Length: 247
Length: 247
DNA sequence: CGAACTTTTGACAAGCATCAACACGTGTGG
DNA sequence: CCACACGTGTTGATGCTTGTCAAAAGTTCG
Image 1 (tube, each protein chain N blue to C red):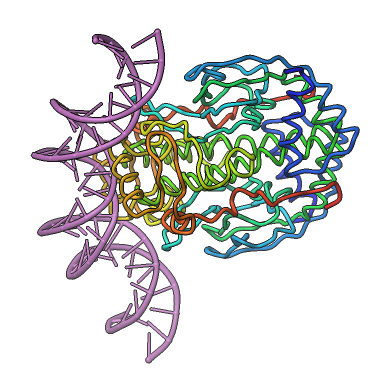
Image 2: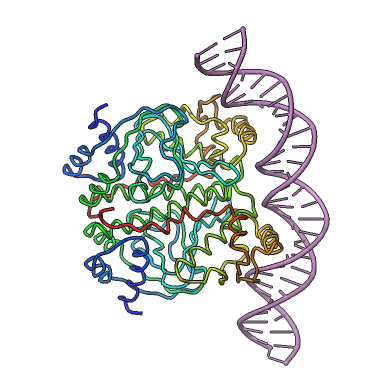
């Protein structure tokens, strides 16, 4: 992949929510960047490190996690191919969490100074980048409610709904079935449950014909029912928010 | 309070983390804004509303909450006097959560168009505002871990630690004791517990001499111990992050 | 074919929720 | 000034959801 192709995929992502001019596009495509292939489990950002670059996930899946003092792991978000993983590192100093690959995939690193220069010289690009981080914030708020106030089954169904919608929006699945790269242990870390209980809840969803598939592939058998079971309302994903300059 | 005084308090907040030039300061102080006094429980932003302005909390406390389909309330953050409550509404369309007053207090509304104009014409201001929302994101991530992976007692202690540090940083308490405007029911909503269990955990913290005080005032009797009990590390608050233009 | 990981199952324990009642403080109106 | 209502905090008994531990079965991959 050439640098231009890499940056084009990041630009596509931004353009799903923001309008960009030709000048903006040209500037994005001119960013310096460096590509790497990473294996599952590989660490992209380590908690406590000072970040020098922002990372774009070109293919594969990644997750963001934090670890409690006694070793409990909490996944705080899941990143899909095409997403900018590390935008907060453009301004924040020391990483307050880690990002690791879930699957094999390609990542691209853009120096934080270049991102900053771009963001503060071209308002539309700055706005687009800021907007992405605001949507991330909205997703975090929903996750707080998910782990704080919903029971195990609902939590899991909600997570599956979110992934379904986001994969579809990213063009990575037809909305009916997809390959889920998460193990049940990782689903547990994302929902604040134990792997054993996740297993039982998945069986419960399966037995009620809401989902199908086995191992790590999910088939949505009853989308309406799954949304109901997961108390899911996609508004928090703000996928419809398309904004221009003069909004 | 004159508009200038109102905006000065917002500016102070921004300047705790970002450097601003005289031009930046003048532009902030020239923003249009309108002040209101609000009673406890009063709603500042309602979930589902289209936001037209950003809100700055001048005095008092407020909280952000979301509600599940079956009526469970989850508080996703607590806002202290001096904080900009609604910065995401500068770009995001429909509010994905509500903000309500915890105590009586004054709030100021700034039209979102004015905030946008400012942010995209003066890079240092745009950076300062973006940075605030990124720190909010970091706090959300910590809360996900708090409700997802820590037990009830630790969760509560962690919340008390966070409030202690933030109040101190805002100059609203000496770090040893403060008036906590949250009822036990609201503490429960913030930690994903029930009021009854919060009561028991508070008693546990009290009986171990970590905190004192009664009703709604908290005295920190053993700060080191409380941090330990709450698995608390203030790094995620990014209070040390002071950034200039050329960083 | 075997090793390592993941999923599944069962028995049991524990943490937290639920329900209900009571105590306490505060403000209000008679 | 007392009586009362109301919100909040406190306590106890009980039960359910979820966690823990341990082992077996299935899967993937060299």
